Each structure stands twice: as C-alpha cells, then as structure tokens.
Image (cartoon, rainbow, N blue to C red; front, side, top):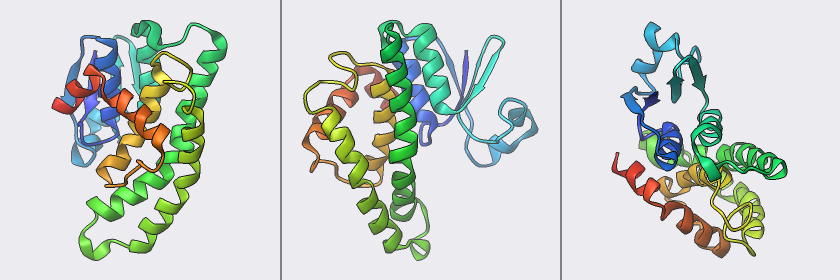
Length: 199
C-alpha cells in the first residue's frame, strides 16, 4: 500500500488513520505544490492534490474517503458494525468537512501560512466567530459520552479530530468548549496520533 502526501497537509489525517489501523504502508513524500502536479502523480489523482492511496488495484483520493476505506477494510472496531452507527460515522465525517473546515482553513492561512503583508485580521476574526457554532454542536454531542458515537473511539472521532487539529496549528484555543477539549485530548492521546506526529 502506498500513501502519497506529506504530514504538514490534509494527508496527515490519512497517515493517522493508517497508523491507527496498523496497516503496513509506504508514505511516498509528495508535496502539495510541484510534486502533486507532475504527470506521474496526476495519473493517480487528477485533481493534483494530496493525499492519495494506492492499495492493489484501488486508487483513491480525498482524505476522508481514504480514512473510511482504511477503517472499514483494516480497522476492526474502528469502523462500527451497526448500520446506524456506520451512517453516523459518515455523517460526522461529512460534518467535519462541511461545518468545521471552512472556518479553520482561512484561519490557518491568515494566521500562519500567508506572508504577513497578505494576512487579513478581519478574515481571522470572522472565521473565529463562525466556528463557535459548530464547536457548540460538537460540545453538546460529547457532553455525556467519551466519543462521538458512545464509549468507543471510531473513525468518526479520528476524522473530526483530524479536521479540528487544524485549530491547534492555527493557534486557536478550543478550551472554552470544555467537552470538546476533553474529547480532543482523548483522541490525540492515542499512540497512533503520537506516531503520526513523529513523522
């Protein structure tokens, strides 16, 4: 199995999933700039983005699709067996992309990645205000349970925590949402996350 990407990107979510399921894989260093635009890589992911996964005859792109595949194929209990919980895992995965990421990425860009003369404090302020609502939803969800679907860590937690980790790199403090902070600490306290960070 080959996983294309670099840790300092959305590929880190799939690296975490691969580490969590314990599958043997090769991380093929591929940047999100020039390396992802070569003809060789575009044959794997025509979008020219990372990550991408090649597992035998399967070629897959989009970090969350990769993660759901890894969990279902190799992850055992990481992918719920109950059809209702499977649907909820997909729901929370999409939710993380739809409700959290659109606010976290502009925050990260305008606080960290863009040259200082191109950063717009208003973009950061708007993003920080907008992310409060979905964080409130997440805070309510984990107020009476350890993880999103109950007492077990699942791919739903890994995927949402993988998105929310962007807040840390954007220097955005989620500690006002105490339940979220405790849940996030449980997720990122896993050995698989430590192995991911070591990369």
